[in-house]
Image (cartoon, rainbow, N blue to C red; front, side, top):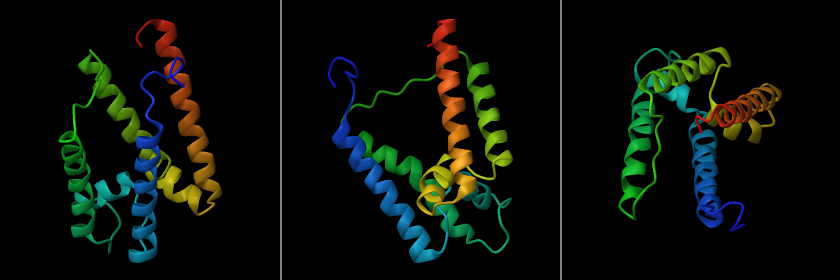
Length: 145
């Protein structure tokens, strides 16, 4: 892997994926709730499903940056943002629009939906991945990436 992927960390990626899978299983089997970030974010600010546990959603959303902060204590993190604030805002708005249009995000469809063999999640995840591949190809071709 060294030459093709010099920054690859397969063990770390495997462990991170395992933790995400276990967390998703705990949410679904233990609480009957899909661990989709967009749905949890909507619920935490009061625009999500009625009857959903807002405190649980808030704890989930607050836990995301707290988890990243804890991991950052183990060593330096490499974080990259686009140079253009307009590009960052446009990307955020497009992702937000897409999650509403697709009735979920990559975590809800890609992790939880695929594990439940949901046909809708299979289509949504395929579209997410295709859009991501196309975006990278366009950015590389334009010299942005």
